[in-house]
Image (cartoon, rainbow, N blue to C red; front, top):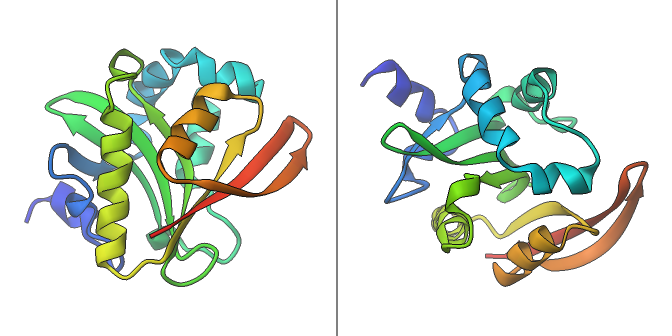
Length: 177
């Protein structure tokens, strides 16, 4: 097993099984330049959250986890088709409860949007989680972002409450598995 494979299989989830089509691996600080370029090509997301991608923001996103969640339960991962980064997902294992997952961030390659690829990826991830007896996936959606609202509702998420924040209203949504 090489180093990339070892980093993909830890105590919790085997991220290599999150997709049958794409190679999945943890993203690290060495990947920040690639992630930054990837994010720069997805300006619609940043228009609605009223911030711009920065190297510092990406560094923080790679490391930060909710209270009580250790680094082994945080999966900041990339989905690759050969050398092309197709999607980035921040998947938190065991948040809010055991056998629940939280998607802190999901972004598709801007050139691949609108083809069903994002739905394919999230549905494969959720199928794997369900096979491991997970019951719920939760996430936050920017209320004012019509693209995100449409995408997550189309993929089976229901809003359970609104959470006002300084930057706007976040919709807490969940999907039962």
